[in-house]
Length: 197
Image (cartoon, rainbow, N blue to C red; front, top):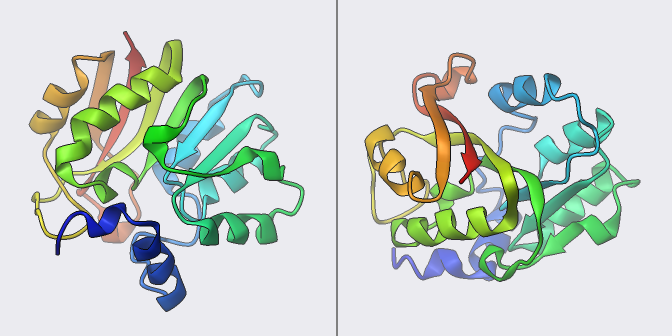
């Protein structure tokens, strides 16, 4: 597959239409849920890029976090979130390319977006993520630690590769194999937490 294809909105919209959404587990992933559960500041401004059906956003909203912003390349999953959570503000649903987005956030949650991007864009992802975070803002979430392939998402990688990528823009980087992944992903997810330099 030409990796340009995955940079087209139509590719993702078509996959939603056909139900080809293997990344979608149907609920908030356990490692991210448990991280959210220990957050105390409900005023945090949070972005979830490439959010898909955004179960993390739904969970945050229902937990009292109202400053949550959801971004996706395809309009389809944003509509799904609105249908599930009608009170979620339409103004906080962003139908856009992540790399064109402007804003400033306290926390960015990463859940299967990084691995959907062609590996050649990873350095750009790190730079853009850092640009969107306030000073001392956090990037938290999950990265797949599966063999890297260059032909279709999910594009995997290793802890060593990821550390080299993120250390130029982030500090206090923690990357550990998630102990609480869902069974099909056991051993294949790195839980990450880091602060913008």
